[in-house]
Image (cartoon, rainbow, N blue to C red; front, side, top):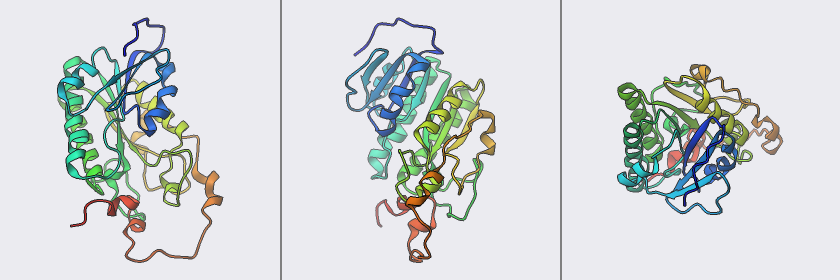
Length: 274
């Protein structure tokens, strides 16, 4: 369903949001409207209840021709589409690996200059919770999902080096209304801070190929964002306001509990058991 192109004086004529029917897509849908005359919403399922300034297009990211049509007349892409949990390799390959390739081929062919890519902290999920890492730390994915996000980061790097397409890879931690467990006290990214992060990634004049960890200003940190300082992202929220829900305890997890040893938490044991 398409709306007429009556562009106003907004920074962008048309922004594409993939994964618009997903959890974060639904959060962002309303919040990014001030930035564009038209927000094109896409998912593998239909996006309903369109409002003024919105248009929708169903698209399977594994369908190369459909992705090319999806990206026509788009100024920039917020790529939040694909599978966002651990799964078998085959569906992840279709959505997150083949789909990512199709997206960047379309971006290149159509001359789109910037992509904001929803990567994940699970690209480094097999670092221990005692480690402090930054954007240059070697990748250590904690499953097929994290592995697919590693591919996405590498692919976007190639398209920048080869064709000059700028990308900001957002290694999102846990973006929910509030932390759901003690691990999320470290990985928490509020919705407001997520929006500020995307705004910084989208409006910074030159970003090259950047990697930034998506986290609020939480008391405990596993990730160092100084190598993304050029984006100017400054989180305003913190998980500290929820500290009373997770009181300190002298209890220790079992020594064999891998989800408590590694930053990926339950993702490190969520995949197939061989």
